[in-house]
Image (cartoon, rainbow, N blue to C red; front, side, top):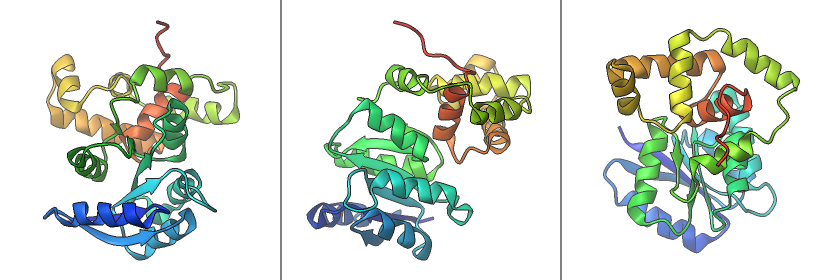
Length: 226
């Protein structure tokens, strides 16, 4: 199946470079280009894009706001957003994940990294660039106020998880792959995938990245103090 990619960046030269790279792959095609966030949201719907490469900083509606709009639209629940930025700052990582992005990548990434990011996001996996370490993400996510109505909702949803689903969720938040979780729990990767999918459904998470956000913001997982 061909991955339909939408490019959202206010720099036409960058969009052109990304288009050449993406269209060179047999399993991908660029289906649209947007110069701002509002246009990206509209095109995500009209082009039936699978993955949006979204610049975090754009005039007018920025990438974060556009990602929130896409995540909030139930008709776009199949769309995955990979946030791109020149500034690989930890606060941006957290804001991107909270907005609903599936991943975060610096614009200085190698071509193979960008193509891999598109495939990972399209598959529903979480993508974080090497600079965005898990420990720092956990630290910033945990700074939020846990005594909120949203956290109470999290608690209700967490209560619907089985003990094994909670165990798998903790391991997902720790950055472990399905294969690694399967080895640790001595089950098959397919069984792990089933637990992950059920946890996503019960917690209302769009993808694996949102499971990580939920695990930390709900307090199920706490960052280690170094």
